[in-house]
Image (cartoon, rainbow, N blue to C red; front, side, top):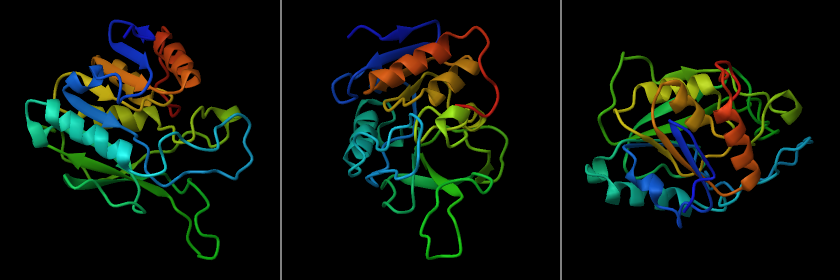
Length: 223
């Protein structure tokens, strides 16, 4: 399949990750997969999507993990960082839980409770990670919730968070079979890493291509 976008670091394909297997040959998978919560936003939006394709259950998440492990030389020990939520059972091969502290900013949660959600989960799978040993609570401000303020995707992740996660990954290329607005791919490029992404929605492919082709990449909070 011909890439939708390609440069010296990033290769992006438009389509389904189940049909394009190029990402399976990468060395590490870092992905904000469909969580399986049947996301449907009732909030007022400018242009943000109200739902996410493949988010009805965890079948796509589990498919990506299983296929990556099958193709990887390390097998079930293949290194992955997968985003998720406490509301859905974690992947069976999870070795450690990282908590992304969003500095008090996230969704509304259950309105009959006196606490609002302000974190997301990241699952560490496999081995080979390295770097300075730090806390498993990662504190980064999220991208602004309204699209007119910068967010292009409902689950868009900040570049500083993705950059610091990838910095501790084993050497080699990075795969993101659910590329979204391209946070993983942009962060990998900033670090000089090769990255392979697949994205189902063409409008997000356009966004990724634009971001990756910028001469000066954004080092701030937008991802």
